[in-house]
Length: 205
Length: 285
Image (cartoon, rainbow over all chains, first blue to last red; front, side):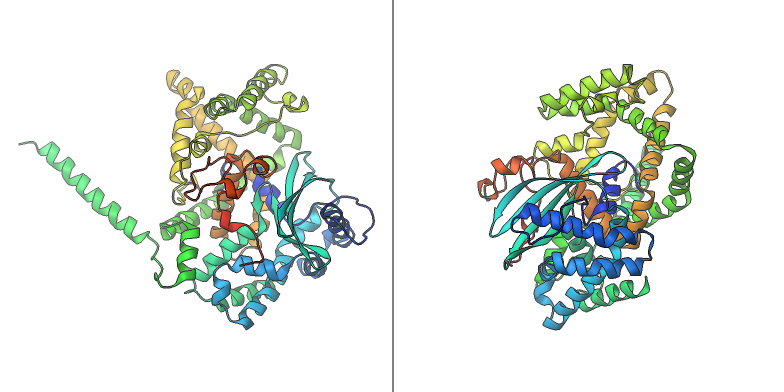
């Protein structure tokens, strides 16, 4: 039951997991982590804000290109499968990466659209080495409470891509990694079964 | 002869046997040791009693649907938002003595000072705690409990344990709750004046208030999940971890203490140690 242990953070996590939103300057080629996150944020507003009243499928269709453009989906897919990635066949790996994008677009579309338009303040950037850095930001919730949103981004080619988002310390990548591991375990270690379940989820909603 | 003692013994024996068999039925089957991926997933989940936990989780989900959620829904409709915030402020103010004790146990002197100041300001100017005046003066609320204190002292969390009514937890956090209960002046006031109902009422109101704030969030979480139990288990752990680190380590402490500075045996102060260093997102695997 959701007693005091799952406090406000659950709300925030569920509410905001993907993006923080602000009226950032118009998109341009991002040359540093801060302006990259600002670009993502402004794109999110343009694309998602009008979607608040649409259906889940319509929202998912709008979120998907954003995920593909700004998130490092292959790396995220690999991380979320954990040690099962190596057990999966190349076809399963490709299949999983593709259905994962649809799954996340569907799962976060509503939370995303509901929370667009809120003030986001981008704070400092911590260099993690190996082309990775964490951009710290704060989003002001409708209630007036601020929420911490930390973006793990990495250099891919000339630009950046997002590898994880943490809202109030709750990581998108870790949460789904554990969820998927549990599904695989309860289905006799079968990655294809997980893919099947995700496909069904994406198709039925 | 001592028939009384004998029957007590027999009852204990029966209880123990029953307990053992329940425990056995509740145990997760260990993975085949040769299956590396399964072993790693098993260890990462750290949930040896998963079948029992899942059973209690289902029970709690049912109770949530028939009791807590409807109550929280009515509460949310009946109370205007400022009144709801007032209730939360009041409940938070009541937690001050326990928070203060744990601030002190952890040597967090600044936070202890904030807790004291908040309590006096909010109890007086804030009309008995209903208005959070202190946070307008930039003294923000923070949580602290004995489970977190134990973690700061280096205690491991132990396996995940989902209990009826109470919900998510682990041995460390449950022990912490018992200590917090004993630390709370209201507990003793309840017993001394024979009004233990106040503590039951407070726990109930706390549950309703929290649930009311999460109505849509939990629905969305449930809807977007392919294994809700595993999602909740993961979120519980991450949330506790973030609380233990006071939500700061990411932003401050990790600048000072890097992974390389943590000795191989992992004996670094828990406060600064990332819970699962291997869980960092990386493309190189």
